[in-house]
Length: 167
Image (cartoon, rainbow, N blue to C red):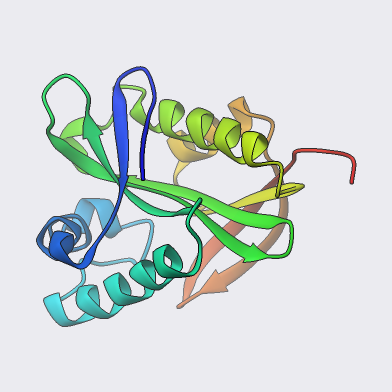
């Protein structure tokens, strides 16, 4: 499955893309707000297996590689994964050299629209570190609202939600 927005293409990860995934999760800047630290290859491999399991379970959603449409360069990942009946998690992670270019806004906008087109989801949620204001602003641009705070693996996390329909 290949999806695309104005500047980006989204292709579901397969086992062949483990090196690209590891490039992302081994980056301390990227992982600061996700796990608090860069992951080892072993930890990244386990996380990748879990990401691939979402791609196997559902043909319309999953974990996607993000590439530039213009250059084909790998930028990071995007996800729209089924959490439960009618609900999906949305998220992204970009390599630091691509921060500040509004790619996160484009990713979230695209996948909110994609979720609406699928007509399967009434609610989307995202998890963000409270000390990551740029990601919070991206979510708020699309109407996401905070609804819960908790710790995940010892790190503070705020859950944001967006209702897609009244159902």
